[in-house]
Image (tube, rainbow, N blue to C red):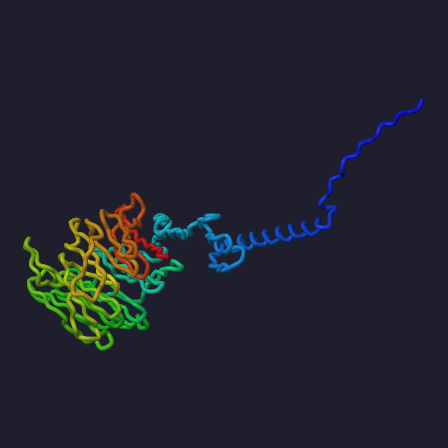
Length: 421
C-alpha cells in the first residue's frame, strides 16, 4: 500500500527593513535627528540656567532651533529661583565698662605708714600718678591741717612734702608738674595765697596775695591761678595771676551779687565763671550766663543758660553747673559746648550736693552716694558700695576721691579709678 504524503503549505515570507537596502540609511537619519534635538535642548537649558543662576543676559540666536519654537523662553517659564535676601549681621553691642564695675573691689583706701601721725585729711587732687592732699592732727584744742602728703597711685607709698604752713592750715592745695599753690589759712579766716615750684619745695614760698576775709578756693591751670575773693562789704572780685611774673589781674567784679560766691574754673587755658544774664522770666527769675575767656586773649564770651548757674565747670567739650548753692534742692545740669551763644541744657540729677568734672564724665553726690555720669551714653552708675556713706572730694585724671563717712570716728580717704574703655 502506498503511503500518502501530505503536501506542506508554505506562507509568503515578510520582508524586514533591516534586511532591505534602506534600513541603515533610515537608522542613521534617525540618530542624527535625535542628536540635533538633544543638542538644541541642552543649548536652551544652559542659556536659561546662566540667566537664572548668574544673571547673565545671554542673547539667543535669531534663527535655528530656538527661533523655530516660536517664542523665547524666560527663566520664569522654566524655573523661578528666589534669591535668599542678605541680612547684614547686627554687631553685638559692647557692654559699658561700668556695667561690670565692682564698687567694693574698685575702691582703695589711703593708708598712712605708722610714723605719720595724721588722722584728718582733705582737698585731694591728682596729677599724673601722684595724689596730693592735706593732713592734720590736733594741736592744742583744734585740728590743724598742717601737712601736705603725696600718695603714689601705683605703689601706695605716702610721703610728706617738706612744706610747712606759716599760719595754721593748708587749704585748697593744688599742683601740677611745675607748681604747688595753696592758701596758708588762719584759724579765724583769711590767710596768704602761696606758690612754690615743684623743684624748690624746701624753699620759702612766694606770697601771691594776702586774703583778709574768707578762704577762696584756688584753681590752677599751667602757670595761671584764679579765685574769687571778698574784697569789701558787698563786693567780690575775680582774680587771675600769672605765676611766672606774679602779676595779678582783676577779670570781673560782683556787687551785692550771689555770683560772687560761685567759684571760677580753669581748663586748658580757658577760664569760666558764672554771672547774671539779661533774660527776665515770667516767674521773676533772671537768666544766668557762663562767661568764657581764653587767658592768652582778652575777649570775653557769654553763653546764655536758662537756669541759675552756680560753680560752673568745663572739660573743654562740655559745661556743667548747679542751679542752687550745694543743697539737697540743687540739680546738676550739663550742656555741650557749641558755637552758639545759648546752651541747650540737660538735667543730670536732682538733689546734688556737689560735683566734679573729668574728661569722660561727671561725678556727683546724692544722699551720701557717689555716681558717675558718662557723656557718651547719658547714663549714671553708682561707684560707692552699698551701705557706705560718702562725701565727694574731687575728680581728676581718671580718678575719683571721697571721704568714707560711714563712721565719724576717723577720716577714711578713698580713691577709685573709673574705667572708660
